[in-house]
Length: 160
Image 1 (cartoon, rainbow, N blue to C red):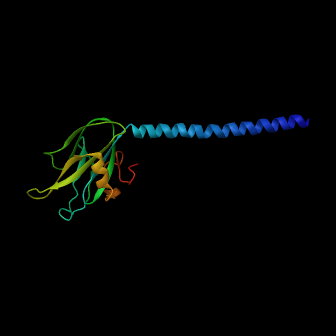
Image 2: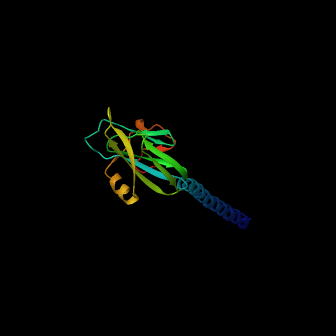
Image 3: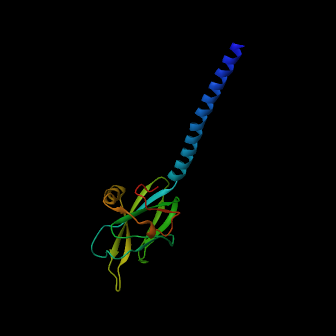
């Protein structure tokens, strides 16, 4: 009788142990799936130097004619975009970037102000990742109230 009780106790212990080991494996599979879906998108960092000239202006930034955000002086934001061809521009309709984005890649776009007849306009400049990563370190994340498309845009420092 004692043997049967001991055997049952050992079986229960092994069952509980096996179940607890399955749970983390399931979670890691889910985590990897979420991570791979984030990796399948391109990260585009839009940023603007902190400068006195034009500091009151907040040019809009667009992707495929949809407004992403209004970029303030000395700020940055991240847009998670699907791979493929996209047209990026600011409120200066004469200039823009037609880019073929690749999933898992990071792109850096600097917004520069250009003088206009009545007001300044934003103009986009695609920069090398090494240069953009260095320049963005000194900037603050964009305030959430400036984000126009929260499905694509993150204003957190990590871009998540």
